[in-house]
Length: 263
Image (cartoon, rainbow, N blue to C red; front, side):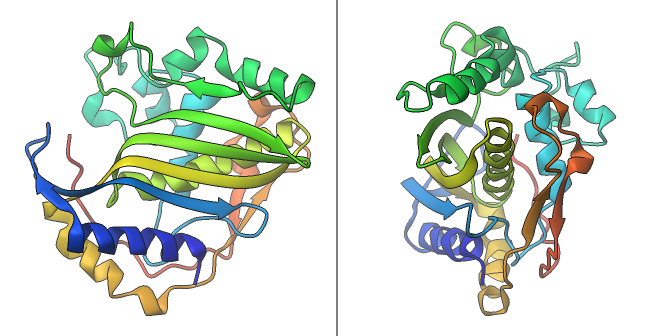
């Protein structure tokens, strides 16, 4: 059984059984718990769920759109046949000054890569998408909004801070795509992947996802081993990675589980 399934299902079950039931901005009530944490050693295992299918390529396309293309233009994502942001697209085709816009505005990826290469023991390696000046001009204020980076013994460690985590739909994407990101940044900086720690301030289950997630919990004993992440070792520049350079080997899963997104 993969560590991703073990940690994720434990949190989901705890939320459903013990979470606080209340309302939120979407109008769909949730069960929620604060301060949930998952941690993965990326040198040992790649974190992706096997108790349900996770659209790996879609998740990777989204993270490349944000971090590599540094775009807020949903039409650029649609060109990749990825439609996860369609519901938030404004008439001008963008999501406002959110996500990739903030990375490009302050050259945050370039700064991070330079720090990793020239001052890897810096304690100031942070990428933040939470810009107070621009929050009002965002179609959706960033959920996975900050990463903190560390180099220890040649291994790149990353902590992802997520203010809000939809456990049914969003978190399975987030845990996988940010694990890929750590691998890509590490390879670009001449480092090995290390720890990936995923901190969720408000981890919640929408009430209309509960029964589907109970189905997933019932699959726990049939969970499978984690697949292997394969990255083209010839690529050494973060901006040169293409979706074809990033694949999974032997990804076995127990099939799709459908849930509706809360906008």
